[in-house]
Amino acid sequence: MNDLTDPRPPLPEWILDSYDLLCTHSHDSDDHEDVQSISREQAFEILLEADELELESADADHAITRLLERGYFYEVDDELRVTVSEN
Image (cartoon, rainbow, N blue to C red):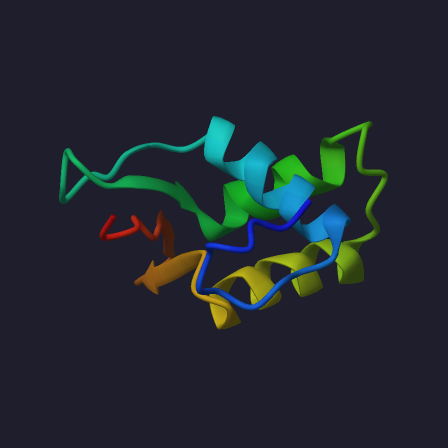
């Protein structure tokens, strides 16, 4: 379910499930200890291998793209970093 207090535009439930899964696999960034990140390649592989999502290659790529476009992640080099709310 989408949080009505979240300023980001809503996404389909399967993309939000992808986000949750990627966040559980993120770790402290190599450059910043207080920033959670995951490599784009690793994120793609995790989404493809997740039994609960059953995504195809194009679906995984679409999910990552939408999460970047909507501000759930931002990309530095080949690293997807979790955007932290200012609240």
